Length: 490
Image 1 (cartoon, helix red, strand yellow):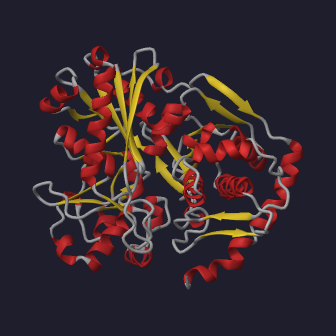
Image 2: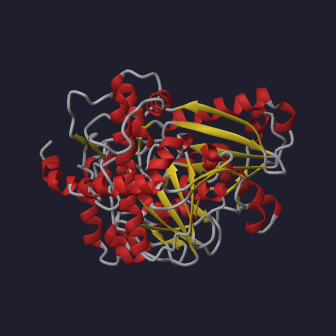
Image 3: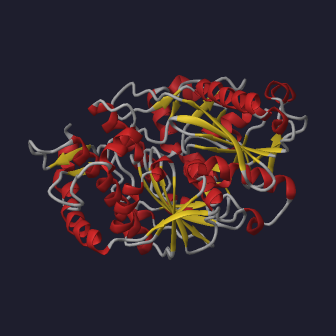
């Protein structure tokens, strides 16, 4: 038995997986995000631990005998968050999250201090990454910066609570801007540009390696045997890739979670930072990947549901799929930049927008408009990934948004690619973390474990819909350049 724990932005998921790679139990607990000022996004790290404890308590209550046979735990989590600890491992301030945009000016500072920044990290400095956040803390909260002894990513703070060890792994560390991504080690140059040194960094392992052992008191509380190992794990996107079997060149996936990710596996370091493509280490040795990232994906539907008085995004989707909203008629265009944008614009000031509202516009029309807007943003990402050298032959879909077949039809038609949906795709990162837990114990090859789950269904591009959406996409691409200067004044 193996456990995967995924620390997301909106909640913690835990899955219990047996030796046949069957998910026999899963549990979750919600999280809240604080937005204390414009562009700010924060969470209390203690809430991560509370939610994890709740989810694990549910698994223990529902599967007590299986929990007693667990051999290892794998961790997955939201990337880039700056969790600041003093020399007693006390949290110094709320974690600054991946979708926080306050450190735009500090990105320019970082790249001016280290002219080789993009060559070392393979990435353009963006406010979402961790290093610019630390420069912001230095500039705006100097007393806190002066007390920083360790900087941990969110899932690695959970690891500290689980094992007492300061450890990270290559995929998540790639998103800090402190990693030499080709060399798979911390960069002294990038740390110096942030006013830090190696002492502030956790030890690095590969995602499939052991990072520590579960504390005895936690094993007892969760009904686990003594000596449970904790694997290095992965950032949420790399863990999702392991869960869906995206590990070799030509394989890719779309993640329709809070954010949206187009992920392509590579066998070498292939950066294209000038177009805001992310080039990161994968969570398996000697593998890398590229990503395009949009900061708001399924969260756009969550926002629309709340704003229009629908009880949930699934109810909103059900209403849309039961409606007669036109396939791609004169419905509004939607920019999905509710929390700024990364690929390809790198604009923390970008905002969401509807264009083309009329008195007859229905809620179902707005839902379709949101789905199209997110699909068009993915099309922007696909364009820069292929320009960066990614060969995308096969695309899987994971995340909560994968439950909507109507959205899948829009995505397939927009991207011009067949989309494959797998059993359990909605819990991909947690399942991938459980697979990494297995690898750290069994020493099996990645090919034996990181296989593709059974196919649930496949959506082929509809040629008629593709033609209609191509016209709308061409209009949509003109929208951001036309209004981007207005966002700076809003």
